[in-house]
Image (cartoon, rainbow, N blue to C red):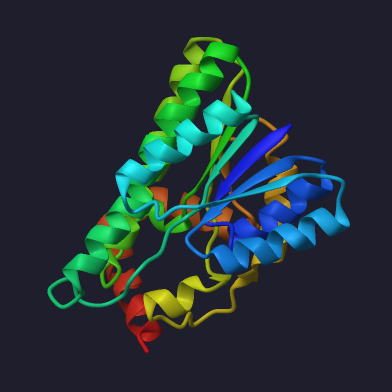
Amino acid sequence: MVALITGASSGIGRDLARELAKMNYNLIIVARSNNKLSDLKKELESKNKINVDVQCFDLSDKSNCVKLHDVVAKEYGTIDILINNAGFGTCGKFTETDLDKEISMINTNITAYHILTKLFLQDMVKENKGYILNVASIAGFMPGPLMATYYSTKAYIVRLTQSIRTELGMQKSKVRIAALCPGPVDTNFNRIADVKFSISGQTSEYVAKYTAKKMQKKRTLIFPSLGIFMYRHLCKIMPDQLASYINYFMQKRKIQ
């Protein structure tokens, strides 16, 4: 069994790699940092009887997404699990945030997910097997002033995943797809996004353990806490304008 994880050098991606290693999956771990991936490879292979393949790619470049699929397909054929986890955010007024950083975010958070999901899903559908997990966020269910671009990227991932899930169901395919939708998580994301959450985040270790269990069930959306699950349903009945105002003041408290 083979699983590919993007953004595997830290946070949720790293800890999902650890969980899948315990389940005897051979791993393909992807990120930009060769040193961090190499350290993770040594750790996982020393603790588990698995093989770990390190692939260094900057997935904000769409050509690298295609190259990654081609390399993996040639070496492994159809993989069993794809976890799209690479991504980052930024915080601030839309008129003041850095445009280049936002375009890179869109390329990483949306374009890379889209390309990798499509290419690996095509392989899986042909074999009628496989599982794709797209790491989204509770942010994908509401407006996000002061983090407008990030929230929008996660909304895209949620809707893409839900739509594909229905298509697969109508085809009676055995391939499964789901979106992980956590709230605040204590990861390197906070430093890159220049934010400090006003409420305590869950650990990436907990989120990874919870997710690994739920991946075995037919869940389209995975919420790693009851509070986040309930907040999602609150957002369904709350007027968008009210949710937007609430989130504005919540984001304002995060800006360092």
